[in-house]
Image (cartoon, rainbow, N blue to C red; front, side, top):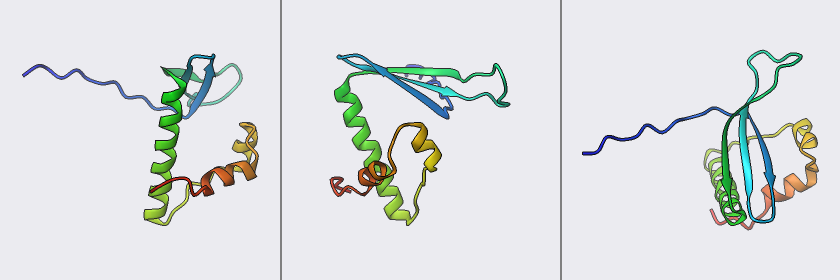
Amino acid sequence: MPEEKEIPEYFSDQFMLAGGPYGAVISFAKGPAEPGPGRTAETVARVRMSYEHIKTMTFVLARHVKKLERENAISYPIPPKILSGLGIAKEDWDSFWESSNFSL
């Protein structure tokens, strides 16, 4: 039996998205353990993909979260300060998550 290759695992509490007309890069990072002047996030992984892949992944992830929330009668709230920092209006956020377009 061939030896299994160990797959690295990473922790991330931040992400950055960049792209061009043919695809995008999602960079995952982790913030410093002790924030302070001159301390920046460390990029731990980059994933390059097509926009078709990103759209598919976005739908599957959102559907998964909605299913977990429904089945467990819980919610994973995102603070308004984070939404604001990402340039996401609260009404756009709520509309996305309240959408009935997901078949659970």
